[in-house]
Length: 583
Image 1 (cartoon, one colour):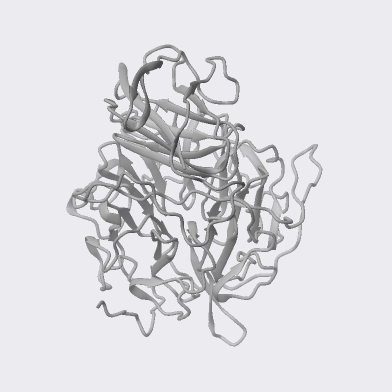
Image 2 (cartoon, rainbow, N blue to C red):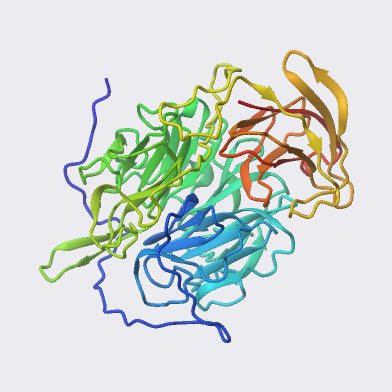
């Protein structure tokens, strides 16, 4: 049995924590010329499908296509500059349901739309909004000079990064430590290309003065500045440099203030960097190289904050460790822990989390030190959001400014009739069972019972499809083969090299709610990608595969689309086999 360890005291002499006095704020409305103020009240029965947590604020993407934000002023996109919001408000101008993903930095937020464009708002002192200015934007502003559709975005503390359709990684904002990866240390108000081969980076995450990515080889590469890493990485690096001590494939990656962690096989987690608050999870406190988090296996996904981390486990519970002076670990005891602790009081199955990215402190009128920031949130499978920890700026969204040590529900996000897809997690070291997982004990009701496994007809979408997919000539041969034992099997050819050719598009028409599984086999391209999309182009499941599957629990019948593509790494005809099932 692993003994739980904690620090009985925490020394707040960390170089990134400063003492600053609070000043009074004056309310003001800031709008672009010609705009009218449009501030929506807190939502009524909204269902969240994605969340993004910044330093003292957070936002949610809803099933209605709106983006709602709450917390510290100037970051909320509602047109106000100096109003803290303890309840969610709608971001100005983002109605319409065309948002693919949302990310948050310390004081800015960005969304990726289905058309591949990126819009950001909030503070902009280093050009992190990417619109060519260093002026704050209190409503969304479009990122300029991206030059191609974007497929993924990430927000660091005061910089932002993206991966384009061509596979080229781009960053913009502060570059004091080389975190933009373009070989310089010069800030940029526009996107600049990371010095990496196209399609060599499969995903990218930003921290404070540091950016890391998982390469298509599953190696971890970082640039900028991070403490306590091997000699190969010592000092400042202005271009991607491999973390050599990470000697096994990474399937997930997060970057905190001065540390980073990777999710590896069997759901283990390995971390490196600063360990002042036990955020490396190895039972110690000294700064060390890459270590394995103690007593943790089976993690499905991982999240990082200033000096703490959280993971979601297969049963939908959560574990956290590290910095905890505001109770952001959610275990009810506000002291730091250097091994994972259970989050107490969760009221459902968690599918996504977020942790406040920054912590500061100040002296109150009694000369006592008060800490600001330090909070965490969870998104449940039914679209409900709960948060816990510090609440100085209303970032918990419960209508108050009082902190709490246990999860409380964000106003208007109580959950409902929706089932979100949990992260499948990294591969195990043993073969994955062929049978689909057994439903949990508390699933939401579906229109009709699901009986057995059904193999769905897989149809080709029209090449002139206009729902927002990147569609080119379809190379699939729909009647090429049939696997009698395991259902219909279609052989396809995706050719990246053809003009405008990006994806083969299929569609399926399940007649009832159920779990849709898309299985890919015999693909030859290491940069292979599969997406499952709703009829309105919302991406429901997205993964780059070498062999494997994606799955999604659909809450209703209807038409769903499947996009298949190889990458520039292949640049040739790449055969694959695909089939779909639901149960």
